[in-house]
Image (cartoon, rainbow, N blue to C red; front, top):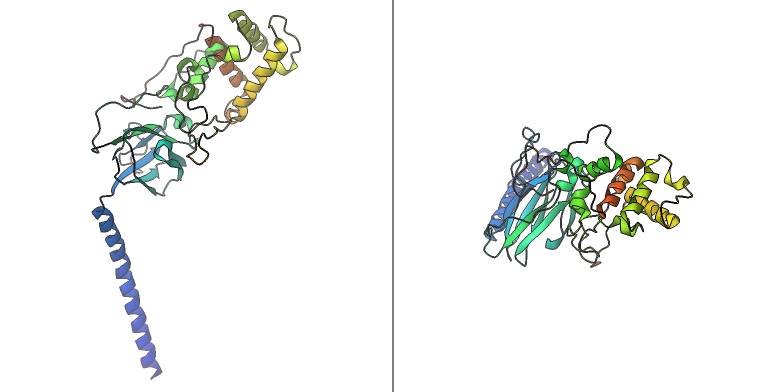
Length: 333
């Protein structure tokens, strides 16, 4: 009798398990069919640190070494919901598209993240990686195009400065500090935000400043109003004596003020600064000032600042740029 009851209970449990095993996939498939019925399409984007791109091409363990993946320019339709499926081919990334209302979303290797986007207006909206992931990090930008019909308008996306900046060839041994600073400014990616020759003007959505500040006027902001003033400070920096220990520099007008301002600028570069939100409830601005002290020595920071101090006088150092084997038209650094 007991055995019969036990056998009945066991048979019932097995039947319930089988029903559940069948029901769950049916529910998932029904959900998928429902999504398809609602017209939700999926765009897959994979972060590739080695090339500095988000790509919409398939990336596998066997192809992740490639350096010629296409930079994705997803095309969405106004008012239509689209699923973005995000993945990483290598290290931790963070995907952000502030003008589409997408705050930074962390993406880790081996795990996909999905978000739904319903754009309300047409245009080309920039996306970013906001986690410093490697040398090409500052190149992990591109554009999402939103079109009334869902078809691209055929015009190229806006250009950003510094394509393939991390491939910039190093100057010859013995190059002076300004030439080395010009190289570091480009090779480290400063150019991608602050622009060629410190021109600034790169958009920083929802930032109080709207665009990244110009640096070509650093001399003026350091109270160096002539080329001779700037040269005099550069001579002090090149002397090898730490600036903190220099109490007098007769050739530098207003030296105590200049010294204080210069050291404050160096500290800002070393420690970094987060961009302030214009709309406190809106997405985070994507472009913060990194803490370069973790990557650059004081001498290297001084070399970059020395280069910037030469810009306002029209005597700029130049560096060779290398497009690289995977450079494509419309490449966004």
